[in-house]
Image (tube, rainbow, N blue to C red; front, side, top):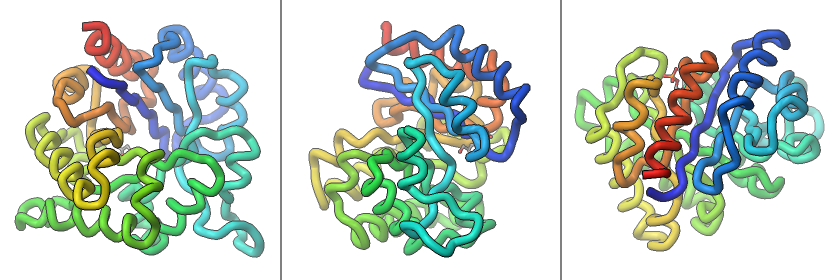
Length: 254
Ligand code: 13P
């Protein structure tokens, strides 16, 4: 088993008190392990709180980044600001941002580029809607989402990036893609990237996201092309998140 990534996307949840309880619960159980990367992505306002409270075994990510460098962009947070406070990762192109905040592929490509310029590792989210799956468009949607970023930026940037496959119909619905369904898409993601660079295609971590929980995580992470999870709802419950982490730990130790 190669390295596994367990990434918590807290979305717009929590407060100082609940965050402290949650991170303490995670701190207690997450040990230094070169083969498991645990990343917590709190809302912007709590990045420094979690940076202070977390142990050194845990990394920090932001949930978004501005598509602009700096300047007159009221309400935005730049890549250099995230780098300044020592954030390691940034989620880019989450389906909620694509749907609610008009993050188009062009905007996402700019964010992807700026993340790299500021030494942040982007976690690039892609995924099809329920209608797209039902009408047999899953693979073509995935292909156009990835290709547009590769072709607007550079394939070389993917050597230091993570992809998260998050089928929109599985996010927050309790309906998970089966391990086989996810594996099929993950294999296709590698096939799409193979045309540009075979080393990057085979080595880029591809996470699955969409109703991952303590009970289904081990079966998902067992698949050859699933390199961990991007976890929403279940990451807000310390014990459940720890269960997911421990599923990864047991696979790494097998
Ligand atoms: P859920 O785990 O709540 O389905 O959310 C997944 C997600 O959107 C993570 O980014």
